[in-house]
Length: 282
Image (cartoon, rainbow, N blue to C red; front, side, top):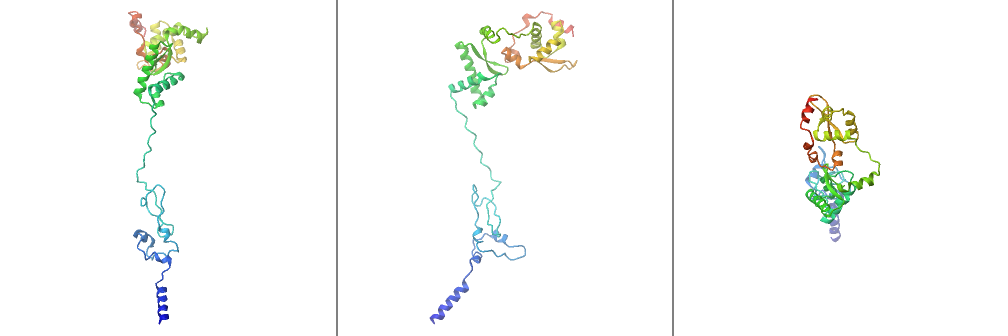
């Protein structure tokens, strides 16, 4: 009896034994959508090879949490891979912190830049380079300019042509010219100076009007001023189609002026009938 019972027990165990590749069908852990994906149209589920049950575990993608993506390859033996969700908002990279400069460092940095510029530099450019607020840079430029004047330096910080630049003081111009020019001066002729003065105060102005004010033909002089970058064309006169001329930024820079409105008044030096003479000669 004992052997018969023992044989029945082994037979029962053999009948109840399930291969490993079939065991996953008995477990309810498989997601419903994965089971549906494994069933072909109008057919039975494909038999899966050994080890396929282990391949159904989702593979984590770096930087993504579980369940954040969609599942792919269900029932194919390649497993489900989490794909990054493109709809999730991206984290913004914080902007680099603005450099902190105390007043002494800001003053020194501005002075270093102003020593190497070859033309007036705007406050906005300085603020961008130094990564400082615009109002703070403007206040420091005015403080530096006032300090140079108060201490009596031979140079000054002046606003000219829409920017800031270091200039020598007018009272020392003779010494500077003697050092720089050393007897090799290239000056504007009297005719060029007169023509430049007319353009400065009457701009935009045509060549015929300049000639009327001066009383001589000035075409050659105007061409000379244009070639030196002191005067430029700025359109045409609607009535006659003649070219109009005005002064350039280089002119303001050479004279140390910020705009044309800073020119000294000319009325005390003009004759009373200059407008009548100009109009009569048109």
